[in-house]
Length: 156
Image 1: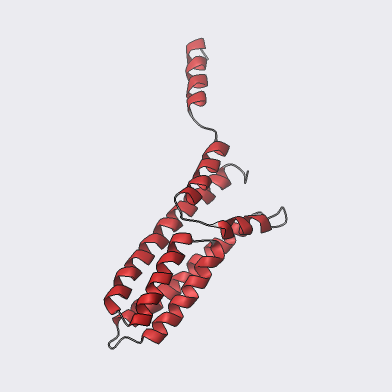
Image 2: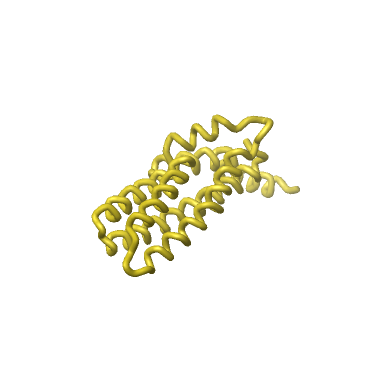
């Protein structure tokens, strides 16, 4: 390898943040942008050498369960007249499971949805549910990238 090639390789490595730094910054951004709250930290504290994938497994389980709830809510919103009590029960479950992983923005929208249910406001429910699904999908994408980085780094 030539000296120029070595220098270029060294410079490119110096300009590129380490994988560990990328992980730290990505994780920090989740909290700074309000996507996650302290519940996620509590999940991380439960993870140990005996269960190194604990948080990822909990999040994966959350997304499996929440897909079913989203489908139930979609179906309930499509029925006329709307059964606001049933909708509120579904959203209560969804909010609870979202809280368990620290999905802060999703939980906030769930609370708003429940207010619209209590008021019998179908239009508010529909609009808020679109926001819930959007925040849910954004967080899923962000966490997927995070867990992929952790895997690449060997679970730093």
